[in-house]
Figure 1 (cartoon, rainbow, N blue to C red):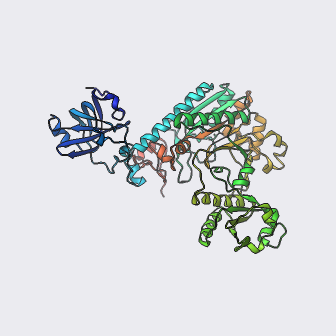
Figure 2 (cartoon, rainbow, N blue to C red):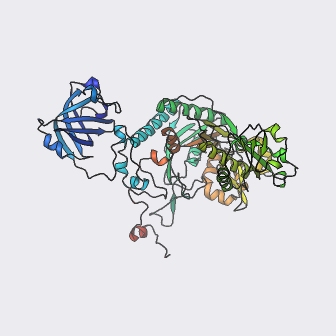
Figure 3 (cartoon, helix red, strand yellow):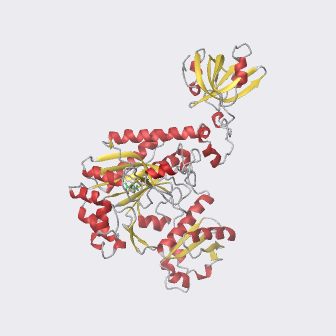
Length: 579
Ligand code: ASP
């Protein structure tokens, strides 16, 4: 007996046929001398009926949830009153003639059957789910998510293949590739005291592939970053990494937005309009208070610095920046306090407010507001004005955080997929802690050539050919045009405080490659986990990764990371230090 088709694929067209099915018992019920088995495989479930006349009745009577069985039987129509519209096989059932238990199963640690019946699943804590990930992965939602992920990856391969990209693998055991995180190190046994670094990205290898003339490269690459824990980060994660030669920034953006549109069409049947908006970093920050603005709702920040400049309200009169939000409804004191707490997490000194009541501004700082404000900002009856004043970045970012919270709280967020490009990032960022310039993207990003004369004199003014790909308020990708001339790369290293010797020691191989004639090139990497999570409508990337780490960076299923034997360390020339 061999399986003839998947349980979940049985339809009315199979009525009258004899089938062999194999799968898991989703649920077993006894009803008036009949045994009903919901038999499940990855495609769904189908109802199997075992009558008392079946020689397999006693065996069927033993079945429990999650046992693995093989069933032979005849497909028949269900009586119309029993048709189950919640499942795709609901018009038919299988009358069993043979049944064989292939494996018994322990009672699962939590029930997983409801989703497959089209019903809501009970809540199970994530720790328990990850500990029992194999059982958890049987749930319908995870089957759906991993299949969606596969469709996305398959579509990416099809599209990029058609566009002339070559998929090329780069090493996992390699040297440090800086992307701003710490490296995971792997000790070498053959050369004790020496270490490989796991790649934070394939950045340097893809650039070297361009120098080597491969012209268009991509890879679905695992990357490793030993970062401080954040709720939705994985120490190992997946990028769609790509690089192109002899292109401008605009060529790269165009190709990637066509790719995104193709993937949404193929994986979800959703159409998105091209081109995606392009906002400069400065505009994104000024209008939305974020370099990854969520365009699913408006509520833009209003520029009101000039209105208060030189006025009597000290706190605002001298501020570098004053920004306002017009909230379309009244807010209570308590709500404003809650929003102020959010603004303060981003460095705001406070959140000022006023309300339009009976045609005049009242409450909060109303008496300090010059009348000219209402010429700049339209405020209607019942609306609330919120203000933050202070240094530009802190001001826009804190009001941006308030904007996001209001978008959620007031239900302003429209469904759908809103992509955009954020371009013209600054090349450098001032690192307060270490009192030096540091790179905003990575040290191989090309300055905008128009700004080159400012590189040493006004580094903060220099824009980069760098861009972020944003979807629904999260950064799903980022890339840049690279420096392809050795002299410029050395100049940028110098600016970053990477001296000639250090540059040679760490990136000599790249400098050497650039010296052999490098084409102008650039690329991007997408965070594949996050992209798929958006498509699946999931908040957490752990819902689209088969075996994720938990929020503490651990893998509860296998127990990684785990201590190792001293002997294992000894062959690596390592020993643990006494604490
Ligand atoms: N390597 C960069 C990153 O992982 C992306 C790129 O510039 O292509 O963020």
